[in-house]
Structures are given as C-alpha cells and as structure tokens.
Amino acid sequence: MHCPFCGHDDSKVIDSRESPDGVRRRRECTGCGLRFTTYERVHTTPLFLAKSDGRREPFSTDKLERSLRIACAKRPLEVGAIGKIVTDIDSELHRLGKAEVESRVVGEMVMERLRELDRVAYIRYASVYRDFEDLDTFAQEVEALRDESSDNPKPQLRLIEDDVPRIADRGRRRRTRRAVSGD
Image (cartoon, rainbow, N blue to C red; front, side, top):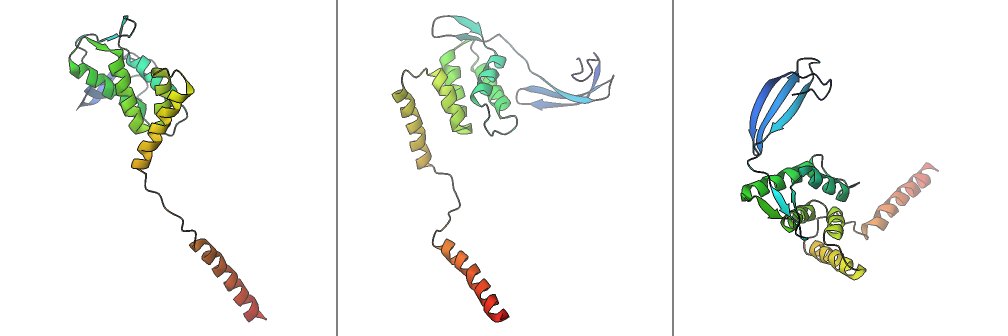
C-alpha cells in the first residue's frame, strides 16, 4: 500500500474493523509516520449496466460519484454525503446478486436518495436523467416537489407581527421616561 502523503510503499496496519461494505483499516506509513485509512471490500463478479440503447458497460462508482458531484455542486451538504450515497447504491446493487442491472434502476436509486438529501440537487439530476422535453415538463416536476414540501413543511420559528410594534414602542417609552426624569 503506497502512502498518499509521501508515496512510500510500506505501511503497517494499526487497527482493522469490519464495516458493512468490507474492512476498514487504519494504517501508518513506515516512511513518514503519517496515518491514513483504507477500505477493502470483496467484489465477487463485475457488475454491468444495461443501457436504454442496448449497450452494456461496466458499472463505475467513479462515474456515479462524478454525476452526483455535478448535481450537488455548491449545495450545503454534510461532508461525506455523496460518498455515502455511492457506497449505499454500490452495496445495494451487489446485494441484488445480478451480473447485469438496467441503468434505469441505478438512476431511480440516485433520484430517490437525492430527493431526500437535497431538492435542488434532485432537480438538477432529474433534468439530465429524465431529459425533460420542454419547460412544462420541468415545471411539473418542480411543482410536484412544492406540493410534497407543503404536505410536510419543515418547522420554522414564526415572528408574530403584532409583537414587533410593542417591542419597538417599549424602547421608545423607556427613552422618553429617562429623558423626562433626567430634567
């Protein structure tokens, strides 16, 4: 294992833990002494995607991650959120136990997760994936998200408008009383 910091080709394993996807190993470089983490997982058979045009191509987690990064560009996401989606989808596809999966299935998995993670990223991904033919189709998808949001509104603090003048008046009264009592 090459050190990602200095490129030295030897490291020692400090800690190993089972993870849902394989084995997580904490390593220390014998050259520079810095520590890094590696993940090992077993790939039984290569997974292929069946495209809608009839082509077959190997499933690539790198390609999936790239498309997610584009959809999530400049969005306020938690660190590692994209990596978690990629890992979840990869694991789910391998659990299916099939050698070939339709690309449509992967696209739906991505959209399902993005819909929960970030609505803007979802719309960005869906606009490319579903290849909206016109503005009306795009608007219908956005409207469906709005309707869904109004059914499950996020709790917000309300500003009671009646209290705003009272608070402002209270400050004026105090200043007025001080001015009167100071004379």
